[in-house]
Image (tube, rainbow, N blue to C red):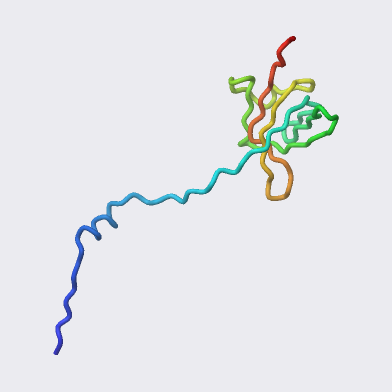
Length: 109
């Protein structure tokens, strides 16, 4: 009859028991920034015309954040004629999703 010996590394087992869970680290998705004048804002879609008269449509979600300069505001505060900077990402369906919408106040010359 042969004897089987079991070696246990208490430190290793202890570290497996008390170690905090490791969260996966994903690289941040770069955001594209667009600037222009608000043409329309219906709550779900923000339509902006850029300096080249190109119309851009951004899908707004419950995660979209709105700012006036650095002050947080509501999406309903964004009005046609406002000059905005929109940080967006491409949604899975290929649409532009607004992440941050910042109302800007152009400096007078």
